[in-house]
Image (tube, rainbow, N blue to C red; front, side, top):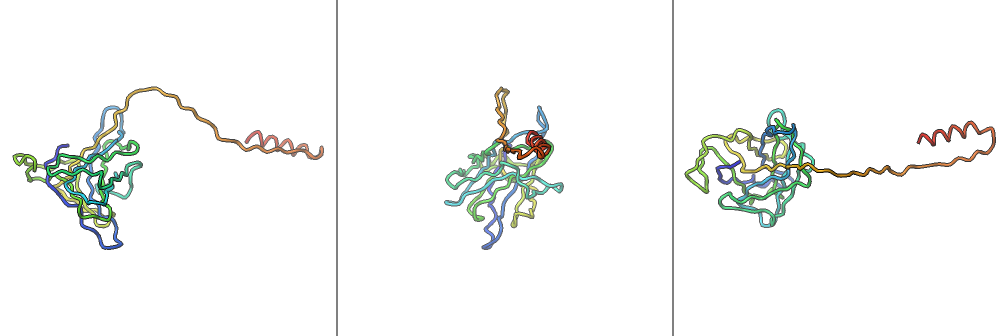
Length: 219
């Protein structure tokens, strides 16, 4: 996805004790050859400015039936970057790669949301976006005349209710895993069992002992 780029600020800090104020960008997973699911390995985001000491968190969330981000975070999709690990660019050409600890499974023909939240709601973070009718900062002869069409930019001041920005999208790249066919061996070991021993005191308890032994064998 190549974006016409200009900057947009991450929302300003909330009052003391307030919740996180994230930005979110939805994207649609188009069906690929080979199945109904794909695995995402990383996401590239493009920053213009960053906080000198505070980091930023990226996560992927499910999107509800109304098209808005929900609170459900996909497993393994939360990645934190320290300020020193965030790259910036004055032209929107340098990315920061958020690599997932384990590939994140997403289903084809569904929408998902990238959510970005700086530590402490820092106002210093700025990211590059594409906006309809705004020239590219790297090449002013390029002007986007239509929206991307496969996602929507959102902002929130509560991390629960999101507001849509219809004519603007974050500049980002979604990278998916490409698996190779291979062979391997998996060894499965049973856990330890518990055993108990019963000694008969007299013949009259023989039937009870046999029942207990039967129970031990079943365990």
